[in-house]
Image (cartoon, rainbow, N blue to C red; front, top):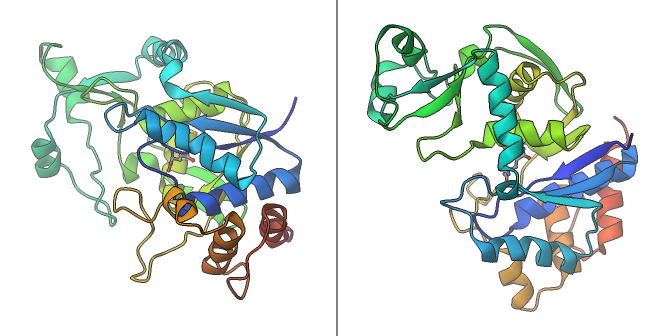
Length: 293
Ligand code: GLU
């Protein structure tokens, strides 16, 4: 069977330079490992996804000359998520959590990064006390208390226990939407993704995704690679929410795709200056950077 890597942007804003760098890594990994490329639109969060952002993902990538082999869009995949949820429910691995944001903050410890480590209050309460399912709640998955050993092609080895990092986490949120963690695991398994290449900002999700995929019956684990991010002049990562410059804005203001590629490769320390470069050279440059792996 084909080996496959995916590029999985969320249509919650226009693509920015951070996405361009991620795309370069994905396409470079495909070149290096001879992988098919799957483009997945991650619109699981329907409150933030917008049609114009979806359209612009395809358009912006095409303007740069990126080509892919297949696509999917999460909002069209409810039956697949439902079947995966049933699989967890059959194993009694899912429970409703009625805790409010305030309660979560007050009743649970936090990790070094400020993330709440859910202690499972509603897991026990669900068994002992009846609560109406009409009340606002999310659905959490029971994660085993065990260390996951995993390897990153750039960053090395990790030993992480998701139970201690975040505890049982939501797979459906209080607005009844599939969460990122759940949708991404189901998709990666169902779409036959063998290589996961994405930014370092998502690295902390990896152990919990491996744990969830094991519960969903996954046999073969994907290869992981988390690449360094471009940071703004204050050392903060670029983010759509904080209105990082969009690629679209730059292109419309007359900057060429070669100029943007040159700039991103410079900012990511892949080349020593901002010299404009065509897409195939930018991909090869990133690929060369991966060649020692
Ligand atoms: N949709 C996520 C994002 O746009 C990427 C998720 C992933 O690669 O696992 O940041």
